[in-house]
Image 1: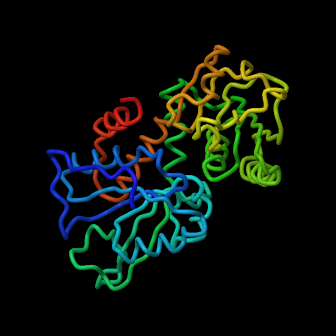
Image 2 (image 1 turned 180 degrees about the vertical axis):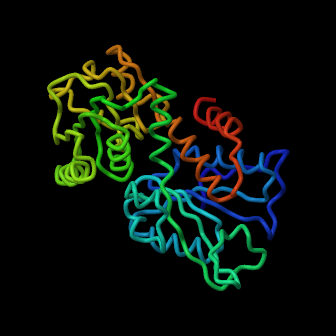
Amino acid sequence: MPYNARMPGPSEEPINASTRYCAVFGSPIKHSASPAMQNAGIAALGLSWRYLAFEVTPEELESAIAGARTMHFLGLNLTVPHKLLAFEMVDVLDESAKMWGAVNTIRFEGRSDSGEWKPLREFSDMPGEIRSQGFNTDADAITRSLREDLGINIQGGKVLLLGAGGAGRTAALKMASDGAAEMFLINRTASKAEDLAEEVRTRFPSVKVTVGYPTVAVDLLLNATSLGLKGDDSIPLDESKFSIGKAHAVYDMIYRPAETRLLISAKDAGCRTSNGIGMLLYQGTAALEIWTGQSAPVEVMREALLKEVYG
């Protein structure tokens, strides 16, 4: 059963046999606010589409993507823990996915009679050949949210990054690309942090990268782990090795709960703080534009997102 399915609003057409679908896959998924945001955007564009959310484990991901293609879904979003796994599962990679090494958005495409690959939205009758193309809309969303929500321009800054999974890897590479001076990487599995550090050093040799906690203050502490999604989660920072007050700003990619234990501690220490709602908004609007070929109604989607998370 899909989670967070929503009854159609007054501006939406009722579901019928011609309704088209997009979805988000994740594990866990009950916390996702994407359906509220995306369905509001879809309704504002006047499309007879719906956006759903499904609990999909890593072991089920490949078959779930194949199932969505078979059922002629128009596109997918992928959240924890699927962004790195999907990189190897899609048929073709957009330049954004190649650049940042993770896939958080999939568009299904069909081959036309002329041999050209086109988004499935352009077909009234389903084509015989369908492929999946992977995109990454997280990278630009991260830096835009940091700029708008915390007033941070990462160029020349020092960053402590918690987590080296799909979202963490994208964040590290994007901030390195944007000119971060120094990065400190922490991950539960140290080898993953070492691998990411080596990739950053190779691709962006001007960035100094260390695996481990800093001994100096940092401009930004960014949590890209899933610790904080559950109320009884431990804080993702080892405060015996780094005092949170030594971070000028703290950004937690988690947006529900709206204030994690990490953000509460950071606020108590006098840090500027933000959760990941801005990142969610901008990766989501970019995904909707990839699927629809239209400009996303950003403010409509922002309002729906804020209502879902805070309302």
